[in-house]
Length: 343
Image (cartoon, rainbow, N blue to C red):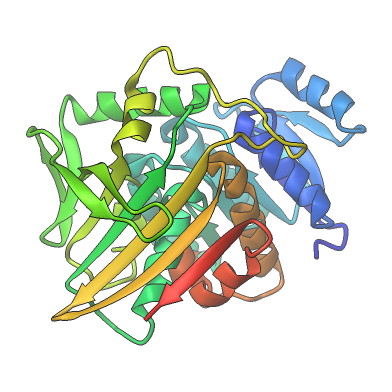
């Protein structure tokens, strides 16, 4: 448990940030609220029994230093991460504390690996990007499914969402990513990221029961194409999304998620089916749960707890599956999702 350690949350007043703050408090940590909007921070602090609120702008390093002062770690929940990740990582490096973010932006995560790997390794620092539903959970499932395999021919992560009501942050991050891609879409094939102009293939994915076969968009590419290949020898990594969820995401009038239980979770449910293949053999890991934004909080907070208690396998910039014992990490999430490992 957190035993009163202070953890700064940048973007604390956002939809996911609020879940992270609540999860930190539940785990015994003391959250420090930070972000760019002083008014929203003050309102959140007032509604949350007065945790410390420290406004900070990504263009003002001194304000970020003040926000992280005395913290044991920082969790960055503020998108678009193309704008926030590098400045907050720089502040974490100056403070000498671990950095975790919940970025789903493919290019932003790639930037983190590209620009900070050497510096973080030299400093013995810990930087974990994409410690969220997209990027983190898929990487943990693929890594756990691999088991004792050191390489595989291909990895597939199929997202069975019954709906997807995107937050304003998700929409902004998506717009930034589309601008960076200049009308192209991205996939991971032949051991590298490829940018292409063709349409995503439509197919049926055989989700396990009780979901069963569903129509999906193939190569609906998520952050797993950065996290998985960062440490696993898998030349083909493909991700898929149920058609109804993809339709929700692209529709401009789909409302933001609304609370449907006492924990603030929406009614959205998910099934994530991770399959790895090598030769003629296949292994699988399946996760089931509720609310992709809410489940990001225990993922990020569990990561911080393991980093601060020394339960890590490496230092530097590392994805969830590389730095943590994937199967053990997934078991620790049992209050929040169910996992089935099928060798």
